[in-house]
Length: 284
Image (cartoon, rainbow, N blue to C red; front, side, top):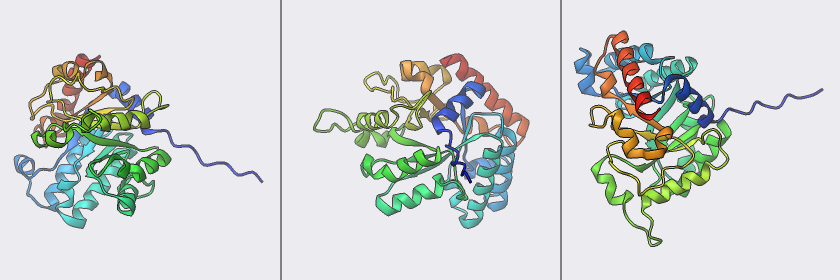
């Protein structure tokens, strides 16, 4: 009697590259912020959260490369909010839309392992295609997430050069070897992406509002998740100027710029398609 070996999961980087080539690189954020719930005429409660999420999933599933739910806006409603998030993740993934869970987890040892299992273990209620993580307890603290992502075919997006002004005091700090902390994070990611084709599964979060980044080596072999387009002031036309030759790796994230067109599903989808078209035109 022969035993069929378990299927090797397709790496996140491969699946993301395929989705970007099919739909364009746009990633739409699902951020049920209280102000957006109010703009949609919804209550700041679980019913409003569920209606907001339902409309967003109906509009986006199967129409964009990836969606990035912001976990905090679901967590604030406790277990009922997390139940809404679980349902959205499952429906998006069933439709073939990649889910990048924006939870920015970061810890050490068994705690980091538990965070990784929450989002990167197949069969877990919140199993996602990728997870945002923070490396500021040392990049090595992310090892449990890196290892589980490799096993499950998932990916990570590591905070490297974020768009918030406060980030500079850590990320631009210069180490004894002369490199900034942000550059060191990028170098670690480049190492972990070696051999990944057509694109590695370990990405960096790099703000689209940061201006000229030519002093940083952004060619890490993996994707660059770029928040800041739309409400934060950056435009698709800025991408080549900010990212240079690495623009082909960029996954631009737009949240409020799309979500403000709700609750009508057709209007939401139309806004996403317009952004996707502008991004395609900007980065080729």
